[in-house]
Image (tube, rainbow, N blue to C red):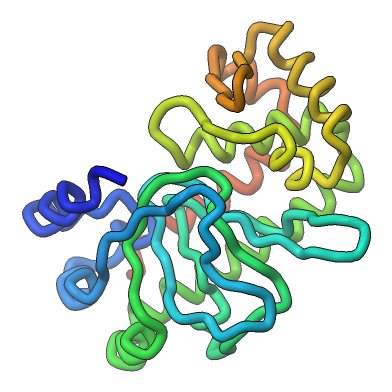
Length: 245
């Protein structure tokens, strides 16, 4: 994917990566941490880590969506997502080498990544960095907990609007997304997603064709989504604007 070299050049000159978690670090932390990261493409369906396998890298997306999924006998369900607001490879931060879930690229983009041991070494040498990333771990846990409640209590159309909004926050432009993927992420069958996405499209909020979602009315889509989107977004915004980094 193009753009990785350009991203590296821009990061060197401005100190801004496009990843909100990294860009919220103190200047000293960014100066020490950023040179250890390498730019990589997030290719569609690329595996970030497999279930119960050693995690080799941590990823800080600057565009795109990484989904953490649980695969069971009856199907696959999304349990968490990461984009430009956070990181993928959280078990490494918590000094765990693997997870029972799989993480893969749901919406393509690009990221900055670091190998496991240099990442842990950086945490040991920079308490502010470690504290900031631990706060992110709590925020991601809050997202997962909110998603569990959302999947139990809210209508599919509301949940679909929430997922599209979260993806829209993490990409630049239209969202390339297979309908089957969206069905798996929402834990429903594909025909149900067809109906939900169709309702949002008839309302003039999105355009969905040939595996591409275009948001036409952002404010209307937010109104159609459940409160879970606003709750989760506020949590990440609080982390991003924290001054104690």
